[in-house]
Image (cartoon, rainbow, N blue to C red):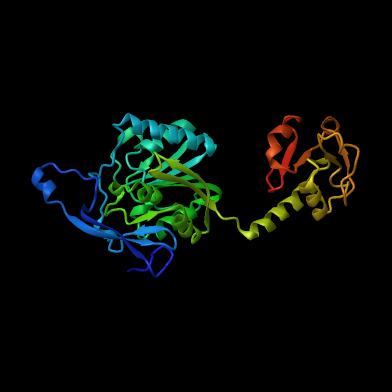
Length: 361
């Protein structure tokens, strides 16, 4: 029995005894004698019932050396290429990746996945890291044949780490580097073997020595929480074999104070201001900041039953969208950012829009 390396639970249980696992799965040999003589090892996997996690307590990271002869290429299969193409379509759409997005993949292998993300997002800034990369898919200009090292002060909108976390005992350096490369809106995409699939389907083929750790969503969140990261979205992938997980930095309570300062400083800089969408959010915000009609002249709402009435506490008259347009405000405070696009359609390019996260649009 070994303590769980993920949550430190002391009562782990035997999970599976694996015989004759090669140190690295995806190295093929030139001769039969070389193949038969390859180094192999037995593995006793342990299970942690506390965080739903499987690990190899005897895994030695120094024994695993990924070089150019390591080849996990599956692109010869139309089924697999269709899967990757569909996945990259979905990611680009869900993450709103575009030509201005700065994109990073760590452990990018032969570069195919990264090449598809680049193609479909039209990003002008794409970077990958992998010591096994060997010039495939016309990505040599974008991929470093090395392990990832963050550049001071450089951040990305989207960072991927696919099927690499499982083989890391000492992941602290990588995750610390990733954190240094994230800003508050960065999306971190992790792709892992799905422990629940292995257990449910009794699929022993996914157990091998070089995978030191097998995560469930519960154990992955346990690990990410140590780095102030939280899971935002989950994909079930490749018939549940894998999980695709999006994580981001957990909001800092200090962010609230920063947003308050931004709003407090921004609004008085404009002479003609309205707030659009008069419900709980707008009323609370107006009362909190004490924005009298000298600062914010009108409230705006499409609901005719609200028009002609006044905002509690601060007293502004609530007008129709047409009256707001005729007023020609310099700044429109958008009380609910879900309606930003709809509201912007009423005004010309000279109008600024302020959402309650403190961002000007």
